[in-house]
Length: 388
Length: 102
Image (tube, rainbow over all chains, first blue to last red; front, side, top):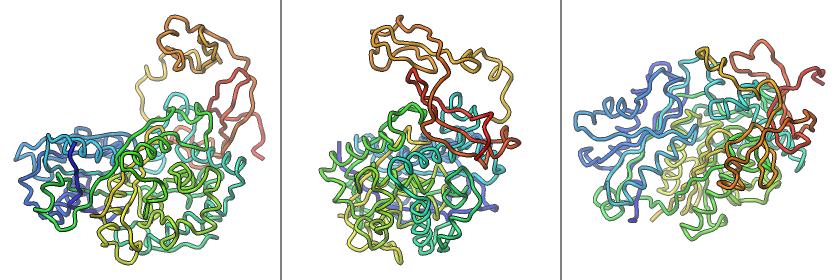
C-alpha cells in the first residue's frame, strides 16, 4: 500500500438551496475541488460518490453514472461508483477511493458526497432518515432517528447525570463555530435559552438539538503521495482510515450509551497511524443530535465514558480548548446533507491542517480526525489526516 | 413507511402479533426477533434454533416521547416509545400504550 494525500477541496454552501438540483450541487463541488487541486481533470481515474438516499429524496438512483455525466466525465468514460452507508456514505466513499489509490490501481480519484433533501416535506425526510434504523424492528413501531438518539440521551442522563443544559451547550458551541464558517447553513450564534425552549422533537431532544435538513455537496481530490507535489505545495496526508460495525438495532446492544462501531473504528485508525486520542489537534465528529457529540467524544477517547457532558461544561472542545471539536459548526450548524457530511468533515480537517480555516482556525493543528456515523451507530468511519 | 406495495405488509411475520422468539440449543441464549443462527455459537447453532414463546413481561431501559413523527404516525403525536428488556433477556423497541403521558 502506498501513501495517499488529499490535494484539492471543493464545497457548495449548505442550506435550503431551492434553485439547485442534485446534479448542480455535486458538479459545482467537483469543479471547485479540481480547480483547488491544480489538476486539469484529464488525470482522473475514477469517481466515488457518497449518497444516502437519492432514490427517496429526489427519486433518482444510478447516481454514480449521473454524477459522471453531469460533471463532464461521461464523455471521457471515467468509471463512477456510488457508495452507501446511511449518513456515513460520504466517509465510506472516501475510504473506498483511498483503497483504490493506495493499492496502486488508481493515481488520482475524485471523492464526492451529495444530498438534496429539501425536495420532500418534513415527515417524508423523517421517514427517510429512519431508513438508517432497523425498518422492521425499530421504525415500524413509530420510532424515528431522533427518537432513537433521544432514548440514548434519556439513558445517558440516567446513568451519568448528563443534563439537558449540557446537551444544549453542544449546540451553543457548534452554532458559535458555524457563525465563523462561510459554507454553514446557520451562520448565527444561538443563546442556550433558545435551545432549551425550542419545541420538542423527541424528548429530551428539542428542535435545536437536531441537525437540520439540508442540501449540499462536497468533493475532494485524492492523489498518490509520490505524485502529489506535482500539483500542490500543501498536500494533506491520510494516516489512518477505518470502518467498524455495531449491532444494527440500538435495542440489541448491551450498553446503548456507546457506539462500539466508533470505539473500534477509532482504535484501528489510531493503531494504523501510530498515535493515540491525545495526539488529535482538531476533530470533526458526527453531531447529528447534541447527544451524538457527547457519545462521540467519549467513544473516540477524548474523555472517559460518562464524562462527555462535563467536558462540554469545562469547554474542552471549544475552538481554543484542549481538543477542539466541530470547528466547522458540525452537522448541527454547518448543515447535514446526509451523503455529503462525511466528505465535508474531511474537507474541514483539510482546511484546518492547511491553515486555511480563517476565523475558525485552530492554532497549530497538525493531526486531525473525522468521525462519520451511519444511522444510530451501526456503521462508523474514522479518518485521520496529517499536515506535512 | 410511505407507499409500500401490499406484500410488504401482507408478508407473514408472526412476531408482529405475538412475542415468539427462539433459543440457541447450544448456549441457551434467547433471541427476539428469532435469528437464523446464534452469533455466539455460529455454525454449531445451525439447525438447533428452537422457537420460544416469551412471557411479555419486562422492564423499561429507556424511553422518549415522539413529537415529530413519520408520515404514518403523525396522527398519534405525542406518543411514548421505549426500549424494553424482556425477563427472558432480549430487548425490543416498542410503543408504550394504555399509560398517561406523564
